[in-house]
Length: 345
Picture 1 (cartoon, one colour):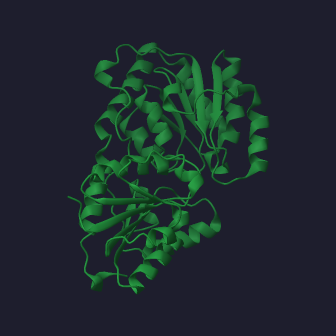
Picture 2 (cartoon, helix red, strand yellow):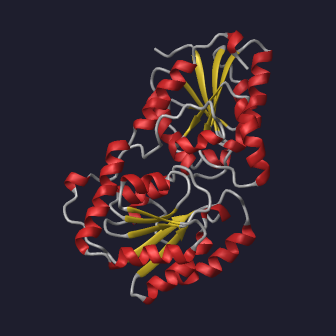
Picture 3 (spheres, helix red, strand yellow):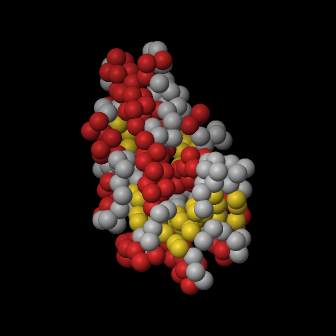
């Protein structure tokens, strides 16, 4: 039997990235007991895996006209959607609804205006949830259930057998400036000269910066591949490179870890912490391609035994953490659904 509260996930993005993957993994956890809605622009919604029991809408205004329960939990799944979420809450409250607002903060704002606005907007929500503790700088009162990992591990350390270095270096990501893929050529040139097979796959950008994407494709041309931009492309024993300028939990890096790859990553977001708990994550100063190249050289030249040990540490870390954040967030949202009107902001 469904509860008398409508839980609504709003995502303003037009493409599928890490935050949208998290949304896909959260929705089924509420079923079948909750009345779940997802609101997203049509283009973005078509790229999302949505359970059949979840009601779909293309705008918050459309959701408001759908006769939801008088108790509503509005969960904003993208920083850019914060203003519209708050406006929707105001409209619903004005017409007699009890509304709880929750912001899930997935990333650090890259642009100056967003860096100023996001903390202010976050304070206007009843609650905030962060995907890694460092994001509490943006929302000090936020619920921080450890750090976000994958929904489930992709491989298991105990069942994997021997991991041998493949002598392949790989990367993939969105063609957005904050992902730092324009830094890859300097690293790939050195690795290619050492006989390492380097390749990079590009996803779909959020920023719609066609000039930057064209520049990026020109720089990466020698290593571009049409391989799937999914974790299946990563093999145990690969070297996976993440040169991000801005990052939080970085699920792409965690997918590579869970596939048994060794990581060379910028020291942003969660990655320095990951390097402390697994020697299979090797960090370098963000934007410093010389440091990134040196780290990659270490991975190429370390002993086969050490390389294998580090890859298996990555498998173990994700195996232990997978799904924990999701379960705690579902519990938190369910508890937040019970609120007195007088407590609303």
